[in-house]
Length: 129
Image (cartoon, rainbow, N blue to C red):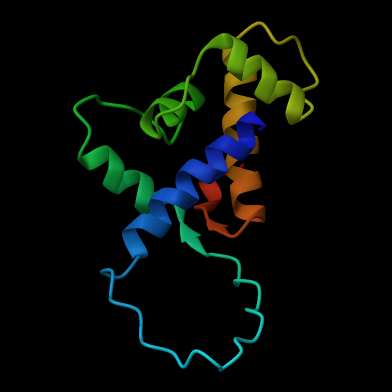
C-alpha cells in the first residue's frame, strides 16, 4: 500500500471508529427472503482538522501536525522515517531532491492535506496553500 493510502486509511479509520454507533444485535430476517445487493457506501466526509486536533488532545507528545509531515505521521501512528517520506515524495511526484529537507517536508505536508481534501476531507484552506 502507498504511504498516502496508509495516511488516508488511518485518518478515515479513526473517523469511522469515532462515528460508529454502539453495536446492536442484528434484526432477525426471514430465511427465505433474498437480500438485495447492497449499494456501495457513500464516500465518508471527514473533518480532518477536528479529528486530528482531538487525537492530539489525548496525546502526551506535543506534535505540530498542522505544519509538520513528520508530526502528522507520528500522530496517526505511522512511521515518519526519511525512507517513508522519500516514498511519499515519489508517490506525490515531488520535483526536488528527496533528502529530507525542510522544503521537501513542507511540500509533502501541503500535498497530503490537498490530497485528503480531494478524497472527502474537510481541510482548512491555510493547510493546503
